[in-house]
Amino acid sequence: MTMHDVQCIFKLFHLILNTLKKQFVNELKKDEPVNDFFVISNVSQRPYKNTSKGNYLQLSVQDKTGTISAKLWSEGGETSRLSQHLSDAQVVKLSGKAEEYQGRLSIVLTEPPEKIENYESPEDFISKTDKDISKMLQDLKDEISKISDPHIKQLLELFSNDDEFMKKYSTSPAAKVMHHNFIGGLLEHVLNLISASKTIHSSHPELNLDLLIAASILHDIGKIDEYDVGLKIDISDDGRFYGHISIGYRLIASKIEKISDFPKELERKILHIILSHHGEKQYGSPVEPIFPEAVAFHNIDKTDASIQNAKQSIQSDNQEGDWTYDTLQKRFYYKK
Image (tube, rainbow, N blue to C red; front, top):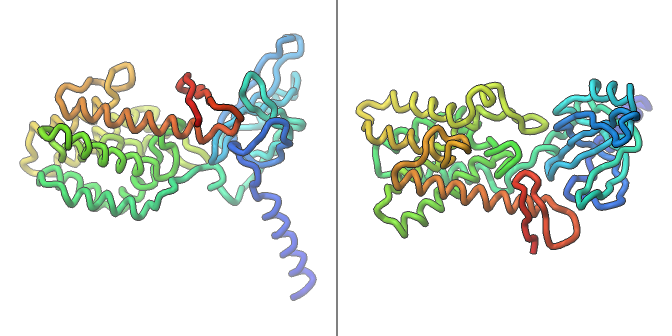
């Protein structure tokens, strides 16, 4: 090995060490120095109380454990220059200190954010289910194999036998910032709903269990095209134009068209559950649930999402005390 080779190896080792993330949002403590990598989710300029000083730089940054605000007490032209220089979904190195204000932790920067190109470990910024995706996928296929209604089973198999589709389905998040907003989150959510559907059916055996399981699998299917996943989860162009309910409705309707003699009544019920699963028009459903399985499924979906929201809110809070405040849901959760 030549001296040149040794120098190259040393430089590579040095580069790896200096791009290795060590501090995560959910581990930051009050008054702790911060010197690490984050991905930007929002850049803005905020006015000082003394308006003659102009604006300061405000960032929202994140990693796989959570989101935190960061601010630089910059002024005038520097703030404007930095806000134009920085952009959403960009990796930056931040230097400063974690400070607490009104019970919320934020990073007060001591120097401008440093842009980082070609960050080597994007998994530092996007969290992933702690469950085995391959096993969850097999569990899903096992559930489909147990469906007794031949038309529902055929419909589900049109999706489950499509390897390219299932690759996207099994790794898709279920949300951008709310419940199950991580790689594999959609699949984890779906399996929870199947389990809950069976529990509800045991108390209400008159409900069509095959229909509830189909709803569990299909209701959020449009999310595979609603989100773009890179260094962070973002809304795709199709997601902004149509939303996951409309995307899912079209995907399912197109598959039903390929099945000969698919019962019209069953088609109506499946598509109605897709359209109504948010429960109310004010929450994005174009129609509201109008038959027992649709009512049941809306509440099953809402319950799993609400429980997961509470769990994630508590898990992401690294502050002392018995309570955490969720700014998105505008409510307190008890942490003990």
